[in-house]
Length: 207
Image (cartoon, rainbow, N blue to C red; front, side, top):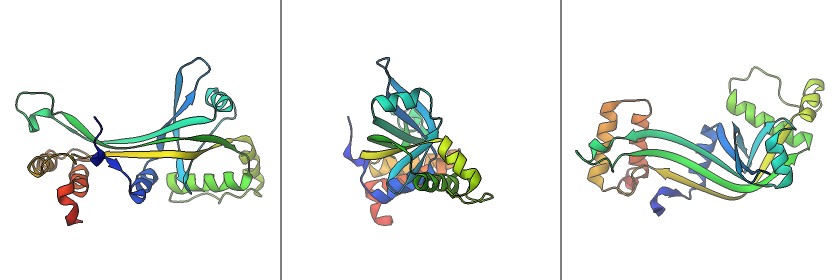
């Protein structure tokens, strides 16, 4: 059962998550009757998703045949063991995560200015320290590369997000699990505890 408290509508929260993430899964329609999933890097730029690769290959073939695609991004934060909540039953075991799911239309970008802008967004995200010449379609080396590589743009028709951090839990349970996370101290546990505080309804007034 889906709970509305898990679903995010705040555009800024979703945008920040997409800027943090660099890897997702592209879903296309395969000619063999199966849905095809392709893991790849992406950038979210000016309200669209961009990804690049070879002009050949199965994903390009699939998108030429049917431009309707899906795209998913997810990050798992912390696993919550059952015994934190029940000394006997396994049922309470869960995981906290953020995810975004997109339905849209895949467009092959041919305009060199747009391709250069998208690659610039990729580099600012993946190599923020710089160390490269800015993308310019007039640059003799970049011009050749921009023409050779395929740039895919997903025009978003629908985008939904689900952030699960125990929003449906009572305050006592939330506080207990947050304390356990801080005590355990695995990577992302402290961040998970802070996100519980941020998203759980009884903590909304705390900023």
